[in-house]
Structure formats: structure tokens, C-alpha cells
Image (tube, rainbow, N blue to C red; front, side, top):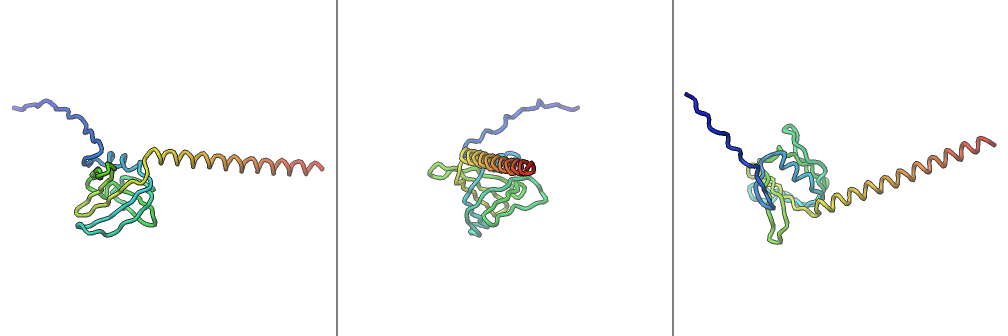
Length: 150
């Protein structure tokens, strides 16, 4: 005799400012918004390294490493068992990426809105420079074409 238990549908967690995240996609989504951070790497409670850097890439690949070097962070969510979302006494959010006795703490030095605004400004500046280069090239080509007429 087989019994079928009704499938209980549990709602997805709602985490606000503090909590533990184990889902790799959720970890990746949270980390993708980071820009400039202060980091501290501890092993067995002993500080190994600290500094500041920019989060350059966040990815999920069990064959690749998390790399922190030259003020750049390349974060692989598969390098960590979980992400603990915490708040400082000043109510600032920070991220602890935890794996077997080691922790990479990331303290954001910018907000996602600031990062988006900066990316937008950088994109706008690049567009202006490209437009100026194209106009200068067209002017030079026009001048060359007019010189050929004489």
C-alpha cells in the first residue's frame, strides 16, 4: 500500500538585510550589484589579508577559482558554502562568504544606485568620445576628398 502525502508548497524565503543564503543563484544576484568594496579574508579566525578592490566579475563555475589580486575581485559562488548577510551597528549591510573555517568579508563602499549611475556616466562619456572621433574622421575624409578636386 502506498500513501501519497500532499505536496506542501513552501514559500520562497524573504531575506531583508540579514540572513543566510545557500542558493548559488541568489548569492550571485546579491554579489552582482557590488562595486567597490573593502575585503577581509580570515582563516580559522586569523586575518590573512585585507584591502580594497572592485568586484570585476561574479560567476558560478565549480571548475574555476575565486581570485582577489591587484585591487580586483573575481568571485565564484561555488568557492563558498554560504553567504551570510549581516548588518553593522551603523546599519550598513556586509557580506560574509563562508567556506570550512574561512571567510571572505565584503563591505560595500558604494551602493548599487551609485554603481549604476557611474556605469551610465561612463557609457555616456564613451558615446561622446566615439561621436567626436567619428566626426573628426569624417571631417578628415571630407577634407581629403575636397583636396583631390584641385
